[in-house]
Image (cartoon, rainbow, N blue to C red; front, side, top):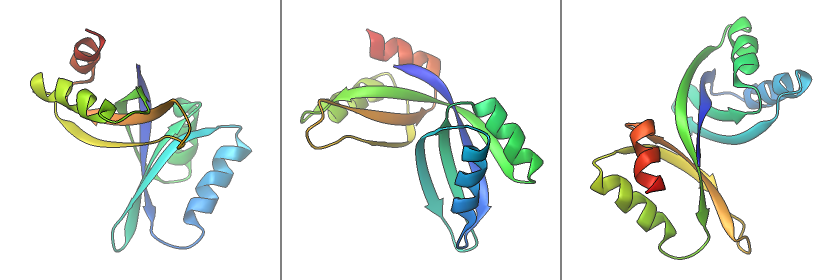
Length: 130
């Protein structure tokens, strides 16, 4: 488990915009490690975990995009029933709010990765490590 930087990019909700963002990252040798997209009528919020968040932020801001950096937890969870429940309960007992989360696990994989924005990342790390 670790604390990592995540970038939230506000983009026009139109064909080709995500392709351009992906191309810009690839052109600068920045790997996209995780992504979620939330859409509204006229724009989308793309949340990215990338290999070099500082470089990516500079590139995106230079292109005139609105980018917000935040801290998130990157957590490996065992792929078994109840793992997410245990994780969420431990945070709930410590009164730490899960603001949003995204992740995945392959059906036959033993572990999955969950990216979580919580109300207090440093305290969450302490709670989850005990």
